[in-house]
Image (cartoon, rainbow, N blue to C red; front, side):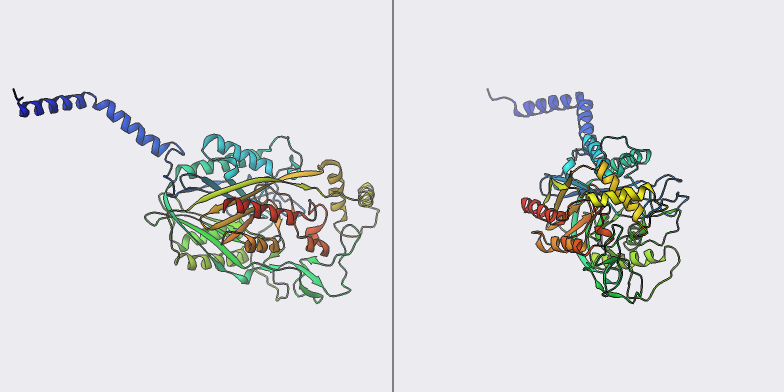
Length: 504
């Protein structure tokens, strides 16, 4: 007998409907849990391979009042906050690799502090410590997160001070918030030229010009020789006028972040007792204004990183001299750089599929030590500083440094070497105040075009002159200002090229 098909169909449909209604609460619970996991749990909403996701956030790292402001040979107490300091965080995810870039408004930060922040980030997120780049801007108007207890990163194992603990937590929180803000995104990059604000601050002088150093010798180059000095001969090195930038937007064209890089030291012009992010902070504010990116639901984050500016500032020593009110010079510099970036930003073409990469190693370098003669002289100076005739106004300061180097510093150190790939862009990270020639060499040799270098990244170990600049002498090459072997810049460049090639 042929079954009644109409009856069979309706009977089956009714049973299926009854089963669904009976289990509706269970299905609803499961669906809600999945949606919650994808949208709330950090790192759960991973992008599919090749589709970029990005998130950005800021975290306030403004130091406490009455702490010493570092950057010069004295540390006046902070009495006023002109503008807040921030850790500015960007996270990118291509579905296979996640990287984070954090730019902090600080003079310099030692490796131990940054390693601790990375450790906390790795504990709470899918990010690998080796894929996190944290760099200082080198503002001279803030409290250093190097702190006193770690002595510039050379005495490992001591406790972090109060500001270091605050700094570590705020940086790690910022990266976690950036991850929580991740969304599908598109990315583009470009560069411009801002030559009017970069000048090499090291000068060769006319024959016969006295150029004493704190160790009793005569240099062949001098830092900051004075505007209009009649003995000026020529700059001792090049400058890099390029401003590089990477722009990230949501798929519906809402700005998420922009990372810029410019090879210019801090600008200054800040009253003695005031905290300021210098032109790095002004650039971020001005760019946000130009892009009409204020008051977004998820705030736009503009980030200015310091390029290779160890021998560059914004003083035109050929003259004429300038006398400007406080903060005016940094506003001018920041506005000009922001305008150049914005003009190029309007012409960018974006991509949604880019390959990310990160490579990391540790490079062992020798630490420079005083010669027996230098050490003997340093001890004499420190034993009777009031009666001994000094060969240089800073001899006592460098005598103290020489003794500390001899007694406390190790013979070798391991420094972090790191490179990032963002599509066709290569980013090198160096934990020194790096001379511009090194940055230009990295741009020329890198297999990624374009490339740029972020200095004071993943640690801070003083200045990094090239071997050629060591032969000229000058402040940046003095023992205590420069801390590692004279061939260090060559070894660092070679290691960065090796790491770049592993990503190509």
